Amino acid sequence: MTNLQKGQVKPWVKNWFWHLHNEINTGTGKPVFPYDGLESTYSNVDLTDQLYRLTPIVRKAIDLHGVPLFKWTAWVSSFKMLRSINCL
Image (cartoon, rainbow, N blue to C red; front, side):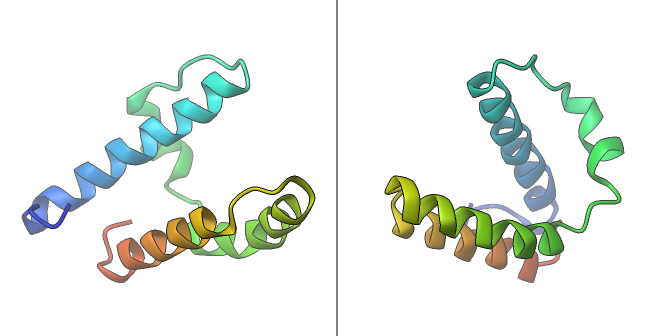
């Protein structure tokens, strides 16, 4: 991602988010989410607020099931970095 030009960051993040969404869908047995549905579905979602709301749930899951805390904190750091460059 460090090699991307400024105009390439948003499409890269959108593609990454679409893949993430579909990995979750596949894991839960849901159908593939259409790429062209991302903006209409998520345009009014405050991702920072959702992360704030999700954090206690993930921390509880980590405590109960041994999910590696390092992977979660690394993901949160990446999310905050992407938010800081105002591409979401």
